Length: 92
Image (tube, rainbow, N blue to C red; front, side, top):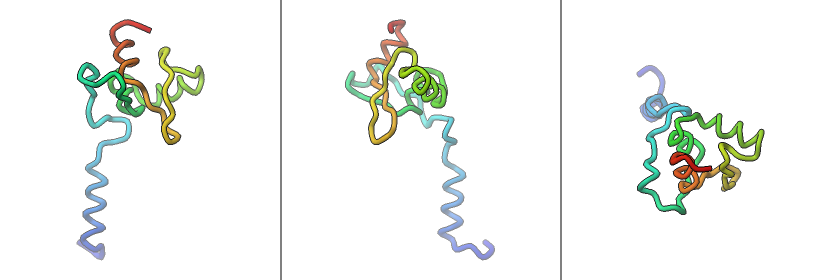
């Protein structure tokens, strides 16, 4: 394929096949997770039917998103599965 080595073409093809950042690879089933489990923003947002940007924006503006305060792990936000499940069941 042109002047590109095969490995570069494969790398480009693999990059194009990966899901976009705003579309989650899956929607987590919170019912089957232990209460101590945490989800990264993208997966937490998918569980709530929101975008990750929505959760980040609410956290930046209010210090929480829908009443849930995330943990910070390595500079990223992580959301407790138990808190998300409680919110989905009508709590918080």
